[in-house]
Length: 243
Ligand SMILES: Nc1nc2c(ncn2[C@@H]2O[C@H](COP(=O)(O)OP(=O)(O)OP(=O)(O)O)[C@@H](O)[C@H]2O)c(=O)[nH]1
Ligand SMILES: [Mg+2]
Image 1 (cartoon, rainbow, N blue to C red):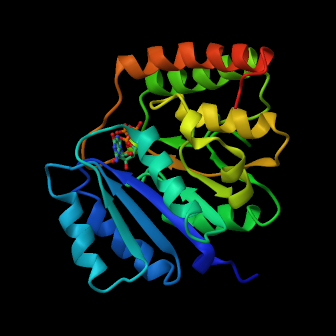
Image 2 (tube, protein in one colour):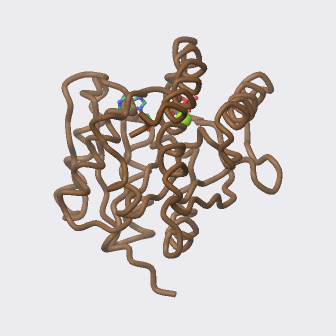
């Protein structure tokens, strides 16, 4: 099956990814010549954006949006989604820059997106596939998924995963100016809104590998925001204000 790479946009938010960006762009360019890429860099002090600009000299399908400071993953993706909807992309991906998500899995998501609205690269279907996470972090992530399923009733096993593919209808169904989460619960909010509208959501198995290079951005505040945000989502749905 020939997959529509030229109609697809891969969004990668970056903050201080100097250890990964060169390898990531080279990998993507050699695997998928027709794939469009949008990097949203939040003024990384380490010069991540300079590497992107260097690649732009030879890659017309590579785009860069530079924001002035670290404004968070959620708003980076919202910016990217709007950029995609202003152009005629049919499939829009979320992916991290740190190789936790394997770029080789892109075709698996894109193929599944041909008959679904939202594809989630899932760590938790058909067993658990996470490499190099301390047990504490695995437990936290798994409990976060379980907690979300119990509170919201959503039938998705990996609700917090960040390797995803939306089709245009899924993105158009969201009111992008009314997404209120920015941190860990951002993925949950998008999944819940799309699922609540009755759109087709599918999980495909991926292997997730903890970052080897560069620095992590996890913090306790993100976890607290998530616990609260999930309850808010349920309450908004009950009162019919989930837009
Ligand atoms: N533009 C932008 N990108 C960000 C921001 N925070 C994180 N990122 C990027 O988002 C992706 C995921 O962030 P990570 O730091 O890997 O977050 P994580 O996977 O939860 O944590 P670790 O992998 O353990 O570091 C990476 O490509 C980061 O560079 C931000 O505030 N703005
Ligand atoms: Mg990561």
